[in-house]
Amino acid sequence: MELTSNPNNNMSSGKRDILNLSPEELKEEMTVMGEKPFHAGQITRWLYKGTTSFQEMSDLSGSLQSKLDSRFVIGTLQQLKRLVSSDHQAIKYLYLLLDDNIIECVVLKYHHGVTLCLSTQVGCAMGCRFCASTRGGLVRNLTAGEMVAQVLSVQRDHGLGDIGGLVLMGCGEPLNNYADVLKFIRQIHDPGGFDMGYRNITLSTCGLVPQMRRLAEEGLSINLAVSLHAPSDVLRRKIMKVANAYTIQEVVDAGRYYYEKTGRRVTFEYTLIDGLNDRPEHARELAALLDGFPCHINLIPLNENGEDGLRRSSERSVRRFETELEHAGKNVTRRRELGLDIQGACGQLKAAYLERKQDGLRRSDHGIRGIQSPGNSQGNQ
Ligand code: SF4
Image 1 (cartoon, rainbow, N blue to C red):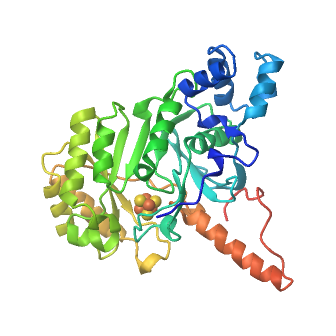
Image 2 (cartoon, helix red, strand yellow):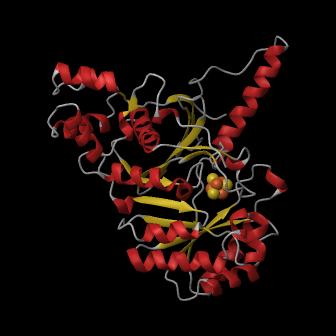
Image 3 (tube, protein in one colour):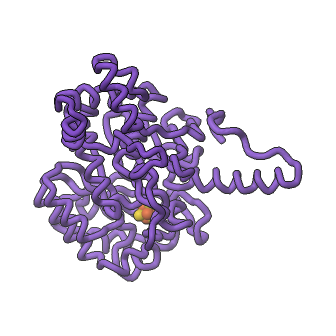
């Protein structure tokens, strides 16, 4: 598939996004600019404090500030929407990119701290039936800098010095944007910058087997979450297109390989869909599939978005499924659901926003009031 070009790689101003540079690349840039490499560390510290202007970098000389200004921009995201769930445990952001594409990210407040769920692509090519993010297919990959900008934008807005974890579980398949996602993870881990521990980062994949195996070789101790959503190939193919490319056994084997190489526990995500994959026999089949694998199973009752008429499993079915897995000795939890009232699942808020925008445009064509202006959307909508 041909993707639209990424504006951050070659901005119309001719300036590049400095957030796209790794610490090593920034040092090299200093040398190219005739400056000492140690300035890279100073600049990185400012950037990860959330500074949006080179002029604010007060320990740099005026001439270096000007040189930076003539070559780079500091990538920022324009906040279109900010929705807070009624229980104040989730905040969802819609951000506008430089090329007018829109992405989502979500702050989730758990008892153990604040986790930020990021997007890695605009749209998604993977075509999972239950997911709103994939409706328009893949538009383009996000750059590492745009992923960093999500972290810094949320931090700026929220005043969070306490983002304790990152999950790459928003819009997009992270392993389908392998190079930039890996670059982002290394950048955000850099002790001179954000200093996020690898163990506090979770990457979620729908099961791209070759990339899972490659990730295992990278020497990163990040957590891996694998979307399984079915215990067999026949059933998985009904809800996930990727199941036509890789068998479920190949996916589980790649997860096992990741665990063996990294020592990090692998979580298998299982969305429960009424009447489709939520029966006790499915639970027993899943337990057998994962037999002897010290992994974790995370159950997620479907967050309905009207796709294909799929329905959320009943409370009784969820409990029964969980009990079957427990009886089989599996390590299983049910995902705590935050932000349901703010369209917390991947892609839902963006889809609703675009539908409302279209609707607003149609109405304004007829002289009726259009959509709300961006940035005024505190609270539940
Ligand atoms: S669930 Fe993830 S991989 Fe599947 S379509 Fe949605 S964003 Fe893509």
